[in-house]
Length: 262
Image (cartoon, rainbow, N blue to C red; front, side, top):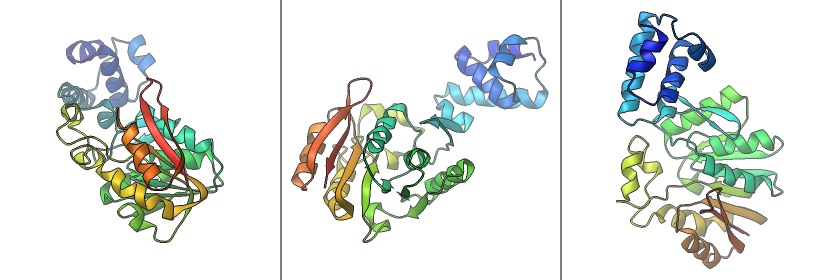
């Protein structure tokens, strides 16, 4: 089988097929395109066809490739963690606009947010909490690969940081409502990191009331949420004593992050 044969027989999007072929063989995408007649070694044929078969089932490319870029960082991802998404970069942008010497990332998953903060604010102390030990191992691996020092904590939200206060607290918690039809498209990702009760706000109802007790004076709580949840999240923050509460839209114009100051 040649590269061209593999691309033709893959049965998936040509661009994705090139990415998979490049990943399996170690050749660049440019090389795959430039030398379609190159023979594909037998061990690569099996791996490529297996990867293409996984993609045909709808499995995200990031899981098949085992990596995803976020905020300029290349991160390892497995099915134990959510795939980092571009809209979550807004959370990092907003945090970096504020002065702080310490940051807390709640529900860190792959470590994407915490590592992006540490990379761009190297002098800050960054703590990241995750209640899934398997997910936390992925985050720790990413920190090691990138050479970025984050304090990784295993636990449930603020239980992992008793008595500690931070200049900024960030979270991309579960916020999908149980029974949401979009969950079918997310079936390969961990449900525990996606679903938060009948309206998707259960995790925020745990985090927001406790946040002020872990914020330094003037510190910010910033949280990602879904379409149409902004008003409820702002109300929750205001009810729990946060000030300057507001919502920021993502590039699609959807209210994506809400935050308030202690």
